[in-house]
Image (cartoon, rainbow, N blue to C red; front, side, top):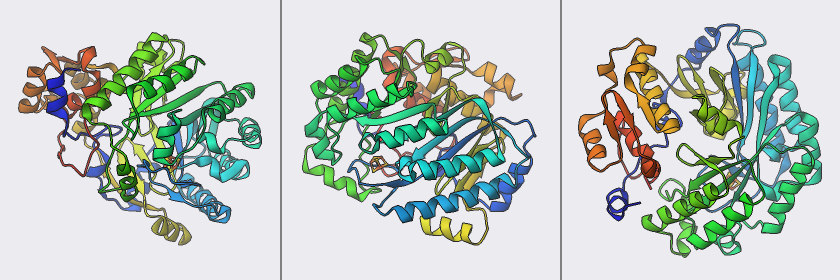
Length: 449
Ligand code: SF4
């Protein structure tokens, strides 16, 4: 990337646009409102379900997730008990046995629930929903936690996709971030999962970590790409010690600056594309035969809270503390605070506390941003027609768009806006030109680069 652009955006902050409006613009939302929204869904609505298990055994110092650290299984088991109650409460407010086409367990480290806990959650979901035979049933895994019993349990429970948090194979970087998982251990876990039939796999990689270099980032990507992993997600470390105090521990070592971060990302991207992977959106890479690459080619690629997906569901329902549901009427979030989430469920109440209704214009802008984030291009006229709105309402903020065009980040051709391939890393900046609620601020969003 051009050095002048790196300098220009070095301190810029923009949302990741996994939703629109983004979660920082959620406000108080009554559980009664969420109840009404659930009841208004048609009995044929296809659902995507997300189960949030915000527990981990150890703290990774780069962690930006909503998670609690505990080695005490009884605390996690108690959380699972309450999750079952939440599933019952939500299901009672929905039309009976809605079809589920996508099911995702995330965290945290969802496998901390163990095969027995996961089995109980799945049994509760199967009791209330029609989980379709073709549904994707996915779980995020920490290689340090994957043993033979877990793999056997996942297969027996019907999981058919895994996402593995590798981040880096470099032992120096692993020590600097307090996440020690030797390369031999990671590669053995991949082999174990594949042997068990869990071949639908994504690997998460990171760049911008302390002690990480271009060489180290490329080495990790190349070793994993050589194994033919179907899909990669490549995330930049977001240093926000004002929000996550433990991240200060990373300041013991120098953090890569913006130019180094860009160089690391570009080197990983070049490595993966040289191994035959296709770039997907901002930060994913997939083999051409992977469903994500096929979805992109077919214009079906979506972006939601889990990142890029081929999930075809119209509605996402989330379970667990801090989980977000995404309905046609708006977003609803469960209490992020574990105590409050427990208390509300203990009183037999839905734990919904935050959210935001979305307007027709919000929905149209959301599609504009989603198309840009997925396809690097959007036809404003086509989106306006689908939402039956005058196209003028979808115009970008003029000063920000003029700046993006002048810098070469975006090209405007009539009502079509596209982002040149070389500007892919700055995709979020172009998307932000359409964001009606954007509030730049050092505390609110991750770095643009
Ligand atoms: S495993 Fe993931 S969620 Fe848990 S502490 Fe590490 S980075 Fe955070």
